Length: 309
Image (tube, rainbow, N blue to C red):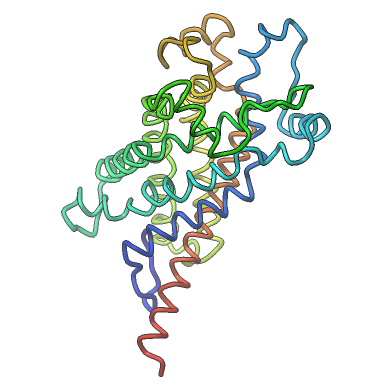
């Protein structure tokens, strides 16, 4: 993004593309249990009527994780991880890796990018990523929402079985279920995440508060995670509910949101806020720090190969 050291070669678009996907996978490996806890908290309001008035199954982030480990085993925290990693390689590569290229496109190669250009770049790469990575997100959410039943029979036996079963039972369109709310969510997330990170990092370097190093990346990533959670939580909850719902439960994402508002009130849109923040904050920190280090390491390696002296 901004603020490369003078001794560093600027990373190429290819390095950014694959570096972002790799950094996204590293971040997912570290934060996946928090994401799973977030999904369980987001969907539990809709599960109660089917189960009867049993009260709240999950209470808080770590209470949810503890309940899942006790009732379903530690592996349940990583249910859907394969689809999650598939998602990051196809998703983060586009939405994060192509952000700088898209920003240059909107500024016509100018060094100074306006806030409008940054927002447009974030919206564009976020929408592009969803367009072809949506099936991986649907499968990931289904696995994370899947509570192990008493008889041990699972909704899907594996990742590939989930893709096949959804396509067979719900049609190919089922794999793109919730695509519109997900495009909305990721346009918002991408803008909040990347633009906030970009601006905070730029200001830190501009006013010499820190050097372009790990503390600077950590601070910018933490700020980006907090801003993103506040802005994106409502549409994230709707996306999760809609993608996990059986065919016919909600006619559209808008109807899903209206049902939530009517039956659970406005606070339903911020269900799972704490795990969302813990997850997005920690995910942003791990991802951006990893991304910056991967870019720098690859370019230094390339530089040493080209000039071995």
